Each structure stands twice: as C-alpha cells, then as structure tokens.
Image (cartoon, rainbow, N blue to C red):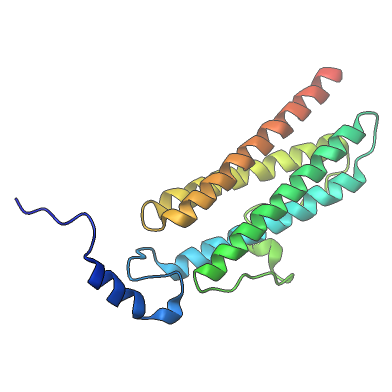
Length: 181
C-alpha cells in the first residue's frame, strides 16, 4: 500500500510557486471554480451592502418609547455588516477578482431585500427576515466551498456566526415588543 507523502517535496513547491506568479494568492492547489466563487462573493457583498443601508436607515428612522436602545442596536449591526462587506471585498481581490460596488443592480445582486419598514416593529421584522436569508444563503455557500477553498469558507463561517447573532438579537427585540403589547 503506497502512501502519498504528507507534503510535496520542497523543490516542487518552490518551482510551482514561481509559475503563474501573477495569480497572487491563487496557487495550483486552489480547487474551487474561481469564477463561481467570485460571483458568490460579489452577491454576498451586495447582500452586506444592502443590509448596511437598511440597518443605517432604521437607525435614523427609529421612533417611539423604546427607540433609543433599538436604534443603537441597528447602528451596531450596520457597522458589523460593513465589516463583513470589507472582508468579502478583500477576499474577492485576493482571488484575483474585482468587488462590485456599483449601485445599479445592487438590490438585484443581493440575496436580501431592501424593505424600509414603517414602524419600529416592521423594521425589526424586516431585519430579522434579511438575517434569516443571509444565514441560509451563507450556509449554502459554505457547503458549496467545502474543502475546495478553506480560506473563503472560514471567512464565511465567521460572517455566518455574526449573522446568527444578529437574527437572535432581532428575535429578542421582536419578542420584547410583543410582550409589551
């Protein structure tokens, strides 16, 4: 039973590293379909940007007796979504792509919708719906990536964990509002 060595010999690694040097971080060992991954990441980028904008609007539009603390939560989430967008854009560039920040088509590229909401309760519900959409779509992306692109997968797993926290926060806020009525 012949076993493959744990690591390719150093000379082969060095030789491969010099080939296609213009590919940057993407080496011959990259197994994912890069074009598909770039599309998934650009769609995720659009999703994060739409979420930033929706949360930011909700932050400014929140009115009512309990609105100050909820508005503050919206702002925290907006800032965290911006951080996700930045991570995704950076990864797109690492993979040799270009992050698509073009405003035209942003909503059509996004998994989540941009729904403004008229009341504080509506805003919370729309944010919860958007988080649930992001959770499912990011989970599918993670499953698609598997072991073919572990760096992108780990990044998306970290983002997914925060999206789950956001959904939990919105569900708590919504539950708190229902208890008061």
